Length: 288
Length: 195
Image (cartoon, rainbow over all chains, first blue to last red; front, side, top):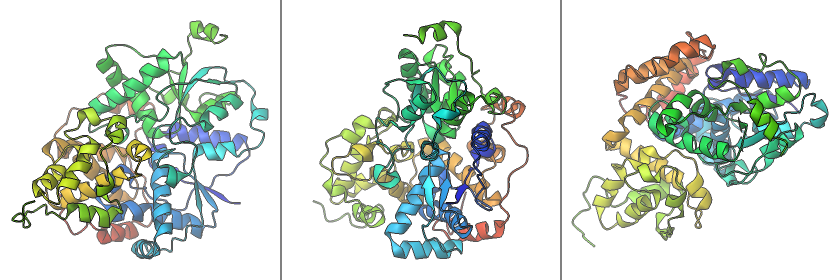
């Protein structure tokens, strides 16, 4: 079984700590994650909004490159890239004429032999993860899945489209206490971070408000867009809400790395806008 | 039903074209409103998703409703979060309908003026990918500023991003950029002039 790695553009830039923490965890687990050769951008929201062919062609070239390299599965940690690759694979496998046309467009034969894996699927399949925990991540956490990890259900075939549980189970494995809360799969505003920051501040503010109201000490995310909006857009959220939120937003791989005893710097925690700190009062309250 | 409107630019066939492009038969929507109830941005839209479906149903007899759908702000505000599709009792893929309406709206040059910034951002994104094969975040933001005129936005964010190592001054590039160029040239929107 050969597993390839599709980082996507944001993990090389604004979300580099997601990539750093994933690779640090993978190294500690003894897993090799070779990148898909000469990968390109998946097209993200822009391509499917503006150009239907491009929205299929860009992911098809990525998947075809992974297949050519003999990869049986491709780990796609960014939930937005995961969605675009999953949708493309689903649509091309359902329509032979479309598969041929798009294959011709990208000058490579997409066959669909490489599965698309999200970060939770990849982590959940690692046996004995509990045994790797050296410093239990004993925090009350709000697991924030966002939209695209779990929807559309018929395309991603992963967990429940609302009220999913897989990330909660992973958090339990590392000693955290996942909370019941209402915004697990509500949208953060995603790609409007720059063009409609006002709407992102509104939607992401609602998410933080519920997490804080339920006593969460951290929001756990599995998507660079979710992180960008909940962390880097914090000043915009606070200006709109008229109040401060101190709750840190942590990638699932960072929480795992901390539990495995990896140094915070290797996990890129210093790159966050909102400091990853847990007030003493909060840690006392966690015994409840 | 009026019969004299068949030459209307949006055409009475919008629902048919949506069906052809997406496989979604909008006539099956019975207006339960669950999509609008779940939509995170329904309150910011000119028509919530269920009303867009209704506009498409009515467009067969009244082409001006097709115009309203294509010129709506809604189709650009849709985030494709998929909650409407998830909850639709008829399992109608509304986000896919929104994609199809966006493409029609662009092709017929009927985009809502309020969506200018959103579309400018998407165009800047694809420009960046076309040039280097991967998104170059700084290049995209500069391109967006030029397109949208929002020169001062996030001026303080950039130095911070640079300090924490999140902003690269040089783009990552795909080796086979000529292939990327050919792919862009072959796709559906390539023949349209990109403003």
